[in-house]
Length: 385
Image (cartoon, rainbow, N blue to C red; front, side):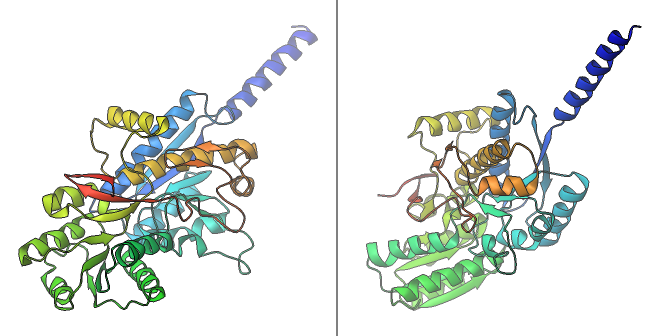
């Protein structure tokens, strides 16, 4: 073989080797509860994420590489979330992770990403503290981002609906005993205090509780005109059903989780009229939303998305992450974080079109004024009147 031919073969082998390296998929972790009471949120989020990844990969991926999802069920358990985070970072070598449904799991687990300088997109967990765990001066940079409406935004909307719009002067709070419920309760109490209102009852219950009579009786005896809630679907349904048993019906106004399929199904007609902040309602009122809803229904053979908010925020989180990786030109965590904090291109999502959604000091993509109030009606969520 001539020298020229050898050179050609060598350069061909080298370009194949380089192409092989370049073609390695970009691994993205996706973590959430895919089983248990939080599953409607976890599964909807994961399935929204999968839709986005499928669309991006069909168009050639990012930087000429396919996105590869590494899915892990954190079972809504803090200790399981910690194990999953360490596995995704150390064993799977993910470039980033999207997910976290439960505020407690997020707070326990995301510190490993912070330490590893790998971005996390919280796309469902709403605890106000979630993006504020690693702030200056202790931490120069923060690797925790969010595409969900935090509880400061939601609690203000809930209180505004009850006190300003509906002119109630007596409200009760029923919140579950998790980090999510108790941090949400604190935000509600702060928002009520700002309006000069002290709740007539503040009651706690546990996950899997099936009898809310004691808590509801305290609310009723206090003269509550509405019950403000912070919990998840199954127990929220027990509150609605408990009111029916007592023959006492006042509005439920609570966090976005009143839109979960397992609240709507388990409460039935008793859930009608419940009001909650929503970043996305399953109505095809923009071309992007119509395409997303139809793609979800076709892919997963469902009519009603189990948790439309989770699905939409999951979908959008992937497009924001993909835009940042593309802008960074590689998957280095520091560069991807910097790109997220200064995205130069607009990203059309289902929730909104994102224009510079993050800065170095603000990692909340959803700002006050973006969410709308939804209302439960006949097993669906519609825009509140």
